[in-house]
Length: 183
Image 1 (spheres, rainbow, N blue to C red):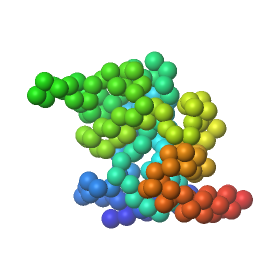
Image 2: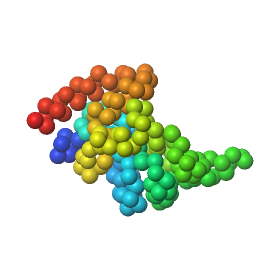
Image 3: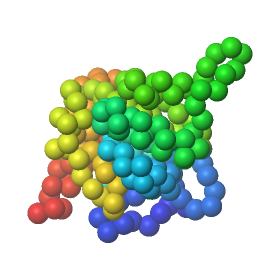
């Protein structure tokens, strides 16, 4: 089931309802993430294709990309919030520690988490030197802190990955459409 559009035409392409398609990110996960991160006063924004989709871009993605501020206090609050959400850290399997909490606490550039939903924690997205540099690109849409389409274009262009480059032309058209719509 496709969710109905929000006030700004958001959520096109999101799947919702009682069934969970594990290949697609769920809007409910983005709201659950936001609720707990807000409760713990974590400074962050959702970036990447998920942020574009919430703003109305028609596409799908498998995970939520989060960009938290890298200050030590924020990283500590982030770890506590992620544990509350049900993400497991420091699990030893065959003598190897899986998903070490130290990755969050030290601000490792890129961390993939899988359960209870797919979440990438990105402390250093391409195109921005710091979280503070990216703050002018932060937008609030239906209560969710998102990177603007212009900011997403910066990260995808700087990354230069084939899958990102394939999205750039469509994202530019979408950005132009959004600007026209806001006028």
